[in-house]
Length: 173
Image (cartoon, rainbow, N blue to C red; front, side, top):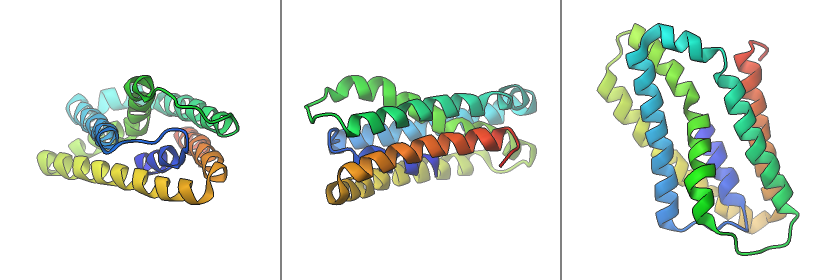
């Protein structure tokens, strides 16, 4: 559901309208990141999961907080036509990795439970892709209706999501 929250927040932006091609690309990158992290966790097993589990929540927190704060700042700036190509190649792919870090732990856990690898992998990829596409659509509707309020709210959601991931990783929440 992390990717859903992120794509709703991105879809809310009035300054960054995404074409269908861009939405499919970003949603596919979210799904691919989840597939790679899940597979790495599954194949790397418990040892890799324990090492990465010590700092994955910090990475996710900093990436999501950075993007969320940037989104809040941009909500109050004058509208201009931004170049989405640079944002697509770095910002969204970075967020895709940040939101997929949990999939690494899921891969480790399910490998220990002998869950069916291919069925889980395919179902997860389809769900991540569809929820990401739906998030952009829902975000666009909310952004059109509520404008700057939704952009600020979307940024706050990203900061909150990063904080929740951090607190959960630290065992506080």
